[in-house]
Image 1 (tube, helix red, strand yellow):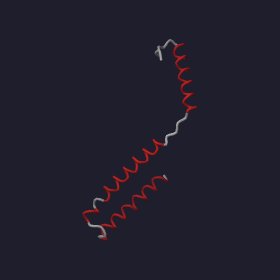
Image 2: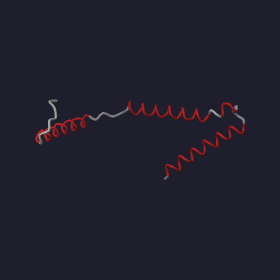
Image 3: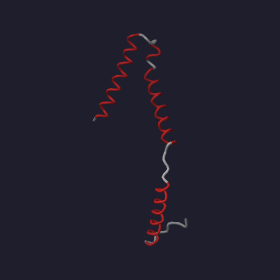
Length: 89
């Protein structure tokens, strides 16, 4: 519930800023109507940037990889005992 309140508060602040810019005529009216589109595009770019940074900093876990490989071998052995063909690799 707290997260929803934060989002709604941010949305209301942005909306009031936008309406204030429209009424104060600080920015030409033709540009003011495009501000929500600019905001959405900027938010999308920020999201893509954060995904890219997250992928670049994705941690590698060599110990976990070894444990996973051992579990795969154990699962193949278990399935072979049950008569399931798991392939040659």
